[in-house]
Image (cartoon, rainbow, N blue to C red; front, side):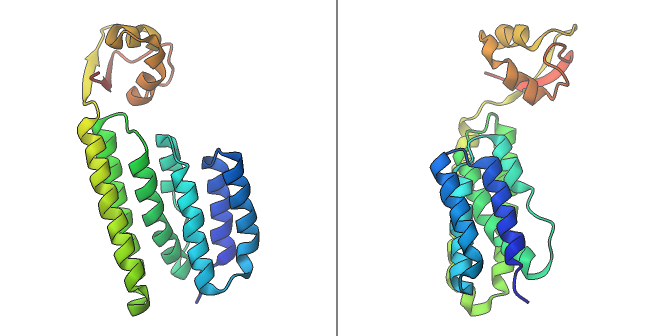
Length: 207
């Protein structure tokens, strides 16, 4: 049973619309998705991996990684194909993004490692025909994990902040960092429901 091409291409189209911001890249991806259904099996496999690479290389923010990491709820050969694509895509995206804290970078490294293992398991099913792909996929995952480890080592640690009284995020950002423009990042890490009334106890970057 072959992977469902229409499902895979629809997924790639949705990802490109959500992540790719460069107009030329988006136009190129859209045109290639339109012609991909008629490709031979080997050419189709190569093409969808190439399209995933473009999408992953367009990931600039943690939210882009999260969109990619959602994957696709499918089964059988289609699930294996998606796993292989995600193994590569998350490795590329995860190593491109400047993760704001050590814990976030470490979580991403773990997610990339798991995705790589899942991709390897899917490639194993191809037998000898997948030997080169297996070597390439495992190498990409290993390199990405090393790069993300470097990002984690240089990222700021997380601290607990206790204020005793709720304050706006802009005030807290200025008090903590001397920079009120960092309020949005403060809200994200603290998981605050509103920037106007921050919790009295929350996580924040140390610097």
